[in-house]
Amino acid sequence: MKALLLILLTQLTALDYIEGMKNYVAIHRGGQKTLVYTNMKDIEAKLPHKQFIRVHKSFIIPITKITGIEGNQLLIKGVTAEILIGGSYKADLMEIIKNKMIN
Image (cartoon, rainbow, N blue to C red; front, side, top):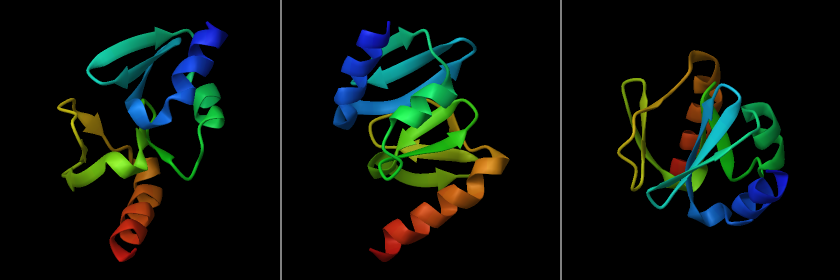
């Protein structure tokens, strides 16, 4: 499992989003979903913080794929899934979006 996780994480540009599912993490990329036996905390620690942001207890998103916000949902380029924004993650997300708009 650890080897599979490392392979998936080396292909960062292909990741659409990462979804926590109790004792597993679903890595979504190109319409495919791969389940890995790990937790969100461990996978978040392995990702580059300048490229990814945790927006909910169950979601980590590539910053470059964020296209907008609709209510409490995040819009992601090429993704139709409902990505919720958690209250405790909203301030950091808004700061990144603000900086993204300025640059």
